[in-house]
Length: 164
Image (cartoon, rainbow, N blue to C red; front, side, top):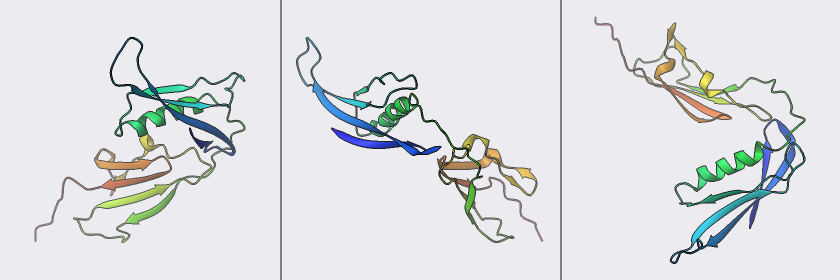
């Protein structure tokens, strides 16, 4: 069994321990290859003080294990009483802007790095917008990363050159 710790970003003082166990099982009445089942569990009680049921993951592959573990941890963590939560009073910061010059070449690709330091609720990526020279280019921007460190990239589809 492996164990790891989980912390809510809005309560830096509380940590819960989760355990992961892999078991090999053969379905009843079946012959052949056994299946691997992953169990994710905690001793932490839920919001009402009751035990939190383990989450079982079957049919795991190397390609799906990260997503499946993330879902299992989220399901367990959503049942925990994380109070008292701290207020997220700091806005995210701009980590970098590239290019950093005021006037740039028309072929430049704009990149902006955003970061939200813990404790924080994270950046609401769905609420990001980008305006360049009074034009809303939100639909043309690409956002990657996660709610605590995101990168906005804008590469205009339309380039207008002055002909002289």
